Amino acid sequence: MAILRTGRYGSAAPDIRYTYSVDTRQFSGSRLEVVTYGSNTAYAGDALAEFREGSNVPVYFDPARPESSVLRPGANWVAYGLPALSAIMALFGVALVRLSIRLGRT
Image (cartoon, rainbow, N blue to C red; front, side):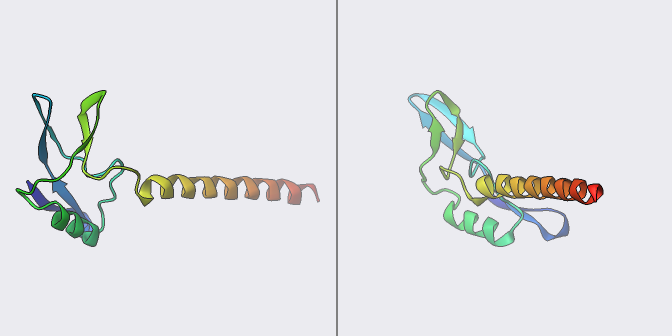
């Protein structure tokens, strides 16, 4: 099943559900990526076009935990971008504290 789920203020996210088999066991999943960025309508539309309902696509799963799966392996920009932005903000905060201490001494 693949549908476009819309939220408040025009946000959109792909709602993709799939089933897969590992050995003789059946599993179902709904994760597109390890970290999914889903507030962009173009992103959601591209995902729905890529994973059309009824199509056969590869499912990537953890062999130790086959119930944990994704359709797109690896990290996307969100997995790197948000921690990087957090680090930049923390460094900026440290710089502001150091500057305020330095200005307070004079």
